[in-house]
Length: 347
Ligand code: KG4
Ligand code: ZN
Image (cartoon, rainbow, N blue to C red; front, side, top):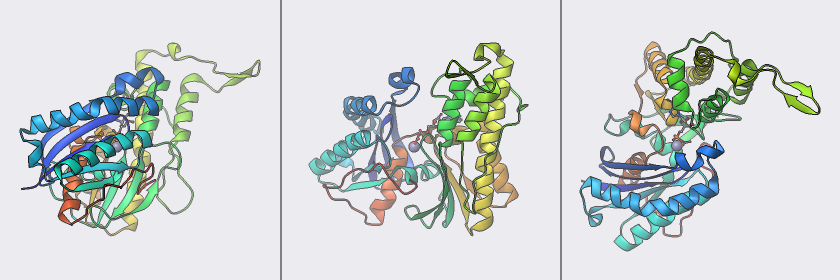
């Protein structure tokens, strides 16, 4: 039996988790910072790193307590050291180093995006490789060809906004608040996709994505084309002109267009790559329509698909501990001089 403590601090969630044998989640503690960033409508890096410093030790203690184990029973410490906000990453990496050193156990650093693709294994099934990996989150929208859980080639990615970021901006345009992905999902369920929004396609043969034009099309659709007035761009309409049903319909229209783009990318990747299954992860995988359409696409292409449970879609440390276990088993070890990087495999 191998117990790995996972630590996650790459963006605005401070998280720690204990996972047994890479699969059985004994604890999964996530301290969200949403309340600290909401008034800015997005994550403020300096606020995020300071909040991580305050929360990291209590979160780790809670994860050990909830797993009902002693710290000394941990076999290895895994931490996401890339990609992400550098100040935030350094907090998790420093805590992981200190623990690994004091407990005299291995330190394992890993890529946060690759860890999202371990999420379906948690409390789930083994993934068969080579696999097609789809990561759709607040910071990433990428399709990867996975030779195994840690070796990947990026087949395509967003050339501008990440899908989750576009969901968040769409929610803000529609006055639904931040973070907006889940709010768009709820609003869309009460509306119909009556408005036609663009499904941007990038040039070339890669399954790349673009979400920035879709966001602008939504803004102009809702508020009209801007007019130049006294040297400024002014929108003819305001969000107050819309009734509740209009908001729901726009949310549904946006969600349809965004999900269509993702599905188009994955279909392209399935057609051009020999893989044994699809594995997906990231916060946007909590989206009802995306999950449904991915499952339908996989069924029609006769290829198995692994989606994470809802609690493992958004950032968490169980996925870090899970992938950390795999690296531990194949003998990967990091030195205490290892550092963090804002860039990772898909960035
Ligand atoms: O994976 P994650 O926690 O962060 C990154 O690693 O970037 O993903 C957070 C993103 C946010 O943009 C959030 O709006 C989006 O996931 N999200 C959703 C839903 N739930 C969370 N997007 C669409 N539908 C949802 N139900
Ligand atoms: Zn993430």
